[in-house]
Length: 171
Image (cartoon, rainbow, N blue to C red; front, side):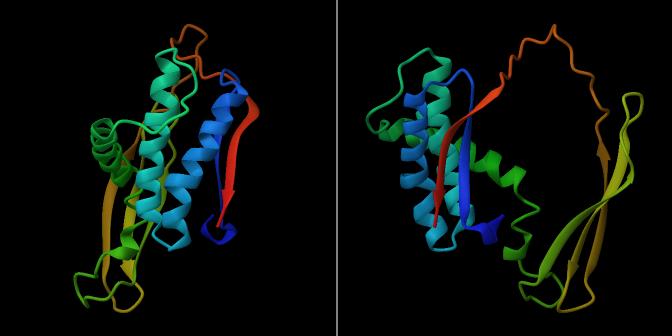
């Protein structure tokens, strides 16, 4: 939560303690500088990109935990991909940065209202509701919720269990 002024990168049980140090470096160099200036979107974009580039990609490739800075061209490519992905994921959170189409102020708020919950047998549905606290603007867009999938031990994704490793930061 933004008011806590704290964040964490949680790593699963397969990551060793050296990866915790890498996570701490990612927090210090990519998340916290922007967060300290209340530029959360920039911090999330930079931090997620740095996390993927510094921790996830080398770990999946079986490499040792990183000790140096990544190559600039790799950083630029990963930043572009993850930035776009992060913008899609967090678009509801950053609606406050957009101007209201009716009054032009930045007082938009977006909520999701679930009308029918998804089950293992059926999809669900709901509405994305965008309102402006400054005027009477209201926009409702329906959306579909995917069916709940049952987990199976035959899955190729291990996921692992958390051992509490990772790193935290405060601003």
